[in-house]
Image (cartoon, rainbow over all chains, first blue to last red; front, side, top):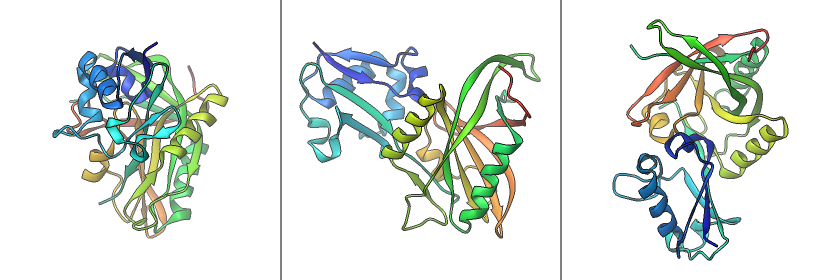
Length: 93
Length: 160
């Protein structure tokens, strides 16, 4: 059973309107790599130009924020769910 | 000219956003817009169809930026999940976010653009000397290079 990646509403227009996708992956980074390989338009919304996850993109494996695990090297096992959760920020200046 | 999408909101909810901006002044307020994309398609000036989106509830939030609340706002992923849950319970979804610009115009800043997500509607209300003024709405373009304005239509009753 592969890893399931949940796609949030604002990114679905760039992922064929899908709300999830499944991949075989050993780490979070690998799963996100497969995701952006399949849906190339997602890349600029998830990653900066130098390939780092954008600061307002939060990734959870099951209920755990990967920032507190091994970030993109966090291992995944079959049946895990990876969620991409937005944080929202802005300001007048 | 860019086609302008339409955002429908009741006068009551529009007033609540403005009041939230006045209440938190001189700090920025923020909250989620709960609603849905309408099946209605409006005709733009160019004769092409543009989608309409309606806001049916607000989910006011606490600005988490304690260090710089006069010119920044922040919504944590936990708050995003809570807003999503509140929306789903009413058969709606989070279709955007609102925030205030204290003593600044209701136009997105470079910082707003840099941190924006596509698809969401971003309502900005300008609050000058504590009094709410202009309110505008914006959507990030696909290439992330800039926002496009979204026309706000005040409706007594949203129509689908």
